[in-house]
Length: 305
Image 1: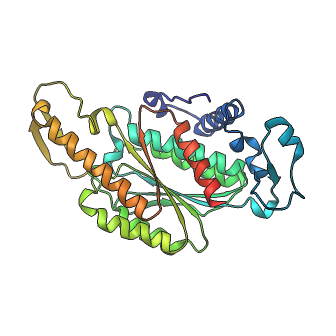
Image 2 (image 1 turned 90 degrees about the vertical axis):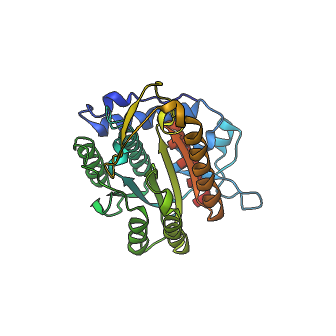
Image 3 (image 1 turned 60 degrees about the vertical axis):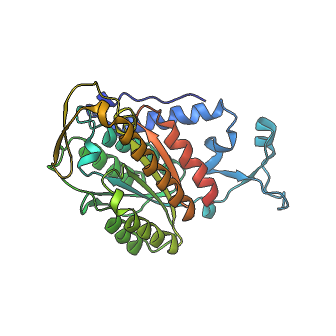
């Protein structure tokens, strides 16, 4: 399958995010046609995989002849999925600051997912948050609504980095859980890096979503080269928190081993807790192609259906 790479340095300069998202989705679908993952081809809005033992009345034999896989025709009422995209826009998401790296990746991923959802006739809504709800749309499936979401995402990229704006993931998740009246797929983009001491609260909020019968897909974004591997030149650095403004001067080589160990423990804890609450966790390094996000979504959608 083709790998959809994105130059994050240029994302903020994109004049038409809607056009770029459409190109990414079309490229992804084309890649699926050429891959062994034909179950996720453009037919996914019209078909579903055949389950052993069910009636063959609605089997699509034309698709079988082309793919040698069994698909059942899906009817209109079966295609409707409600999806809520949650985008963390707090200070730490603007790292690396030269290109708003994590935010740029999250915005582009959300734009591509919204386009893919609308292409599948599914309903999608967008919420951006930091220490409060910044922007929230209803959940709809129309083309005009998609345009509204993509315009809001493009405008988010053009905003300056907020001055030490913190994250309140737990309270935002509780807010969303209370607002979603129907079973939905909730997709969260966040780095969670300022949330280590709040993991208990965050997973209580995620459990709230699961208790309300919502499915959850968590994309954990990191600039792994520096945030996980702590790969900085061996000279004194002054580090400043993007959310609390605190400063600390260190020699990277002196703390690298301890830092890397702590980050591994943090990621292992995330993985363990997500498994406990049946939440799909996808760790995303900004160096990875965006098709990892789209593929993870399609796998999750198959589970939801």
